[in-house]
Image (cartoon, rainbow, N blue to C red; front, side, top):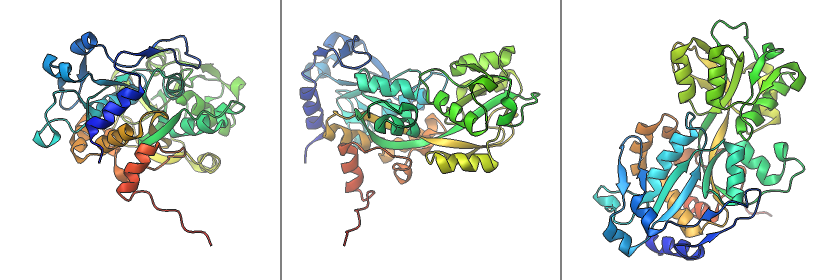
Length: 382
C-alpha cells in the first residue's frame, strides 16, 4: 500500500520539483503557472480550513524544513455565489499542511502535504478554460457544461473535444433562479418578452443555460433586451430599476439573492408544466427541484429545474493523489464541516457522488469508488 505521503511526493516529482514554473499551452498560455510554493511564500500563506471551524493554518518553520507543501488551486465562481464557499470548504477538507496533527488525534483528515485554496472565477466556462490552460488544478462546474466541453457538443459544437479534465464527484444540485421584483407583472418565462433580462455573465454556465431555457419558451435574442451581468451586478440592476429579471443557476440559498431579498421584495419564477417537461426530455442533465418557501426572506416556494454541480480535476494529476483527495472529500469526519458550512455542502455524499456524471471519472477517483463497491461491473456479454 502506497502511503499518502508517498503519493504527494510522486505528485511533486511529476510537477518538476518544488520551485519549477512553466508556460501552459492554450488560450491563457501567456500566464505563468506556479507549480509549487517557494519556502518564503509558504511561510506567509494562510488557508481557511472551513467556515464552521473558522480555523487558519500557518505552516511552522520546523515542518517546512522537512517538506514543502503541494499547493492546489480550485476554480470556483463569484464570491457572492455558491461555488466559492463550497470550494473553500473542500479546500479545507483536503488540506493537511506539514506538521498537522493526525486525523485520529483530532487533526485534519486531508491529504498530507496538500494545501488547497479556492479561487474566484466567472463560473463553469471560465473554470473549464482555466483547467485546460493549467491555471487551476481542480474546479467546480455545471454537469452540462462539463459534458458539452468534453465531447464538443451543445455550446461547444464545432470545437474540438476537450479532454483535459476528468470528474471526481457530483456535489449537489444547482437550482435555476429566475428572480423578479415581487410587484412585477412577470409570472412566467414567456412574460420576459420585451423585458430587460440578465442571462448571466459571459463565461458562466448560467448564461449558456438561460439561453436554452429562453429558447425553449419561444424567446429568441430579439425578443428581450439581453444583459450579461455578474450575479451581484444583476441583483443591483433589479434593485435600482435597471433590470426586470435575472437568471442565476446556483445551489440554494445563494448569498447574492439572500442579500437582495433583505433589501427589496422579490419573487422566484417557477419553471413547470409541458415546456419544462420538454426541456428535461431534450436535455437530460436537467432535473426537477424546488426552492423552499422562506429560504429567502418572504419569497414563496418555487418549482424549478436544476443541474448537477461537479468537481473536476486536471486529467494529468497523479492518480494516487486524486484517490486520496476523493477519499478525504468523502471521509466521515468531513460531514460536520459540510453541514455547518453551507446548506448545499450537506448534499455531498457517497450515495449521490456519481449522479449527473456524464464524463469519465479520473482513474484515481474511479479506483476509490470501485474499492468501496460504488461502481458496478459491466454485465457480461453473451
